Length: 184
Picture (cartoon, rainbow, N blue to C red):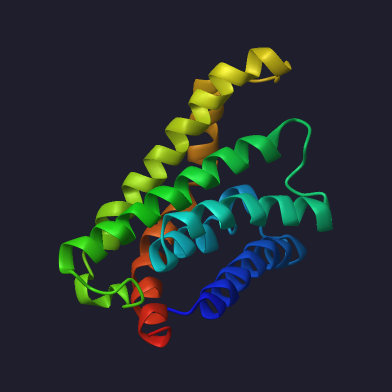
């Protein structure tokens, strides 16, 4: 894949990561329930690899905050969300890398040749993101005076975001295959 094409796709996923939460918020759909920013981050990892997942995981929440003030900086939703999304995108990207090495395909080939892989790495990425989010709250919370405890926060965020988690499990694998075919 050319550098220009890669950067254009990366920019598109960052833009979707900023616009999708804005659209859901304007339409009255609560972001913490449907987790709209998670979708483009996971797609970036699966479709473009770990560096792209990491970059979209940083750029989407920071861009959204710069434009809309959401996610809020205080209580520290923004830093916690950046940490979580970076892990989501990076682990999803590692799934992409495993596919590339396992099937000996060029990295620009879509994931539709191994449709099972998103199902395997998606829950791993989601669990890793939540785990690292809890770890960050546990380690950094006391240093910065964050007003919540790690375990209740992660459990509450997971229960609140259950519809979004189900949506991710249902949408990400077919989206990865469909977009992968288009982006060949």
